[in-house]
View 1 (cartoon, helix red, strand yellow):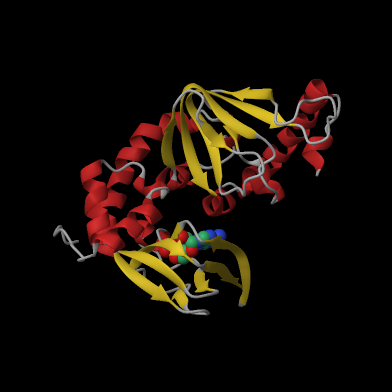
View 2 (view 1 turned 90 degrees about the horizontal axis):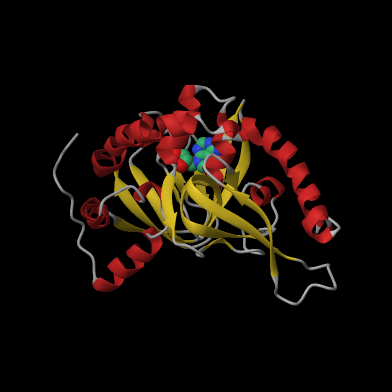
Amino acid sequence: MTTTRVVQPKTDEQRHRLQEACKDILLFKNLDPEQFSEVLDAMFEVQVKPEEHIIDQGDDGDNFYVIERGIYDIEVTRDASAICVGKYDNKGSFGELALMYNTPRAATIISKQTGALWALDRATFHRLIVRNNAKKRRIYETFIESVPLLKSLELSERMKIVDVLGVKTFKDGEQIIKQGDKADCFYIVESGNVKIMLKSKTKATQKDNEEVEIARCSRGQYFGELALVTNKPRAASVYAAGEAKCLVIDVQAFERLLGSCIQIMKRNIASYEEQLVAVFGSSADLQD
Ligand SMILES: Nc1ncnc2c1ncn2[C@@H]1O[C@@H]2COP(=O)(O)O[C@H]2[C@H]1O
């Protein structure tokens, strides 16, 4: 693997767009500012046409991609039939697996309209992101083993979660999730507390726009799964209560790696109705 720093020349306007596209990329969250700036230097713009195959399942991995804009289908072929397992909608990233694990591409990614991507070459991805993974595993191994939801997974499966997660710190009172938004992440609390707040749409006596606290989550507990499991907008808002640090997993990794935990989550979702009945006298707000 080369250790040379790659610099792809960019205009100020391009760098600005690139920074915008990369600001929420989970795999970049653990980089220090110098490493992040090396990543940005190495990235280059790729314009895509409708129906273009950006990645073909089975190929060797060349680049990691960050989405600036466009819709991309994710297709996985098993037993000779291709199934669309999800899509990227104007945000997110893909193409990390083949580069991380030296495996053939695990899915085919097809653009559905004209779009724009930023690509990071394999050597730079390896040098800056993959090398960081050993450190990430050391830091999070014990904590991730203690998370009750993940107990049923194999150690190797838990480590794959660690490889792709991002860590975010929220200030006291900062909004983490907004009720009604489209969902794209799942969260596990590493430290601090978060409070789940709900604006009732059905309770006539409640003042307009007033949010009511319905639950709190602390270390080892998770939130943000409901909308991912039900494919609906966020059912409640979530705020940091004091400083809170969360591990964040994107929806594609959630579906790929946490599929076997979904039954446990569904059982817990049933108890949300009881919480709502306790607070509002009815669980109707969760059902629409
Ligand atoms: N369910 C899925 N299975 C495999 N790959 C997926 C899935 N969903 C999204 N992807 C992305 O599709 C990419 C295809 O190339 P990679 O295998 O390098 O990395 C893969 C992931 O980034």
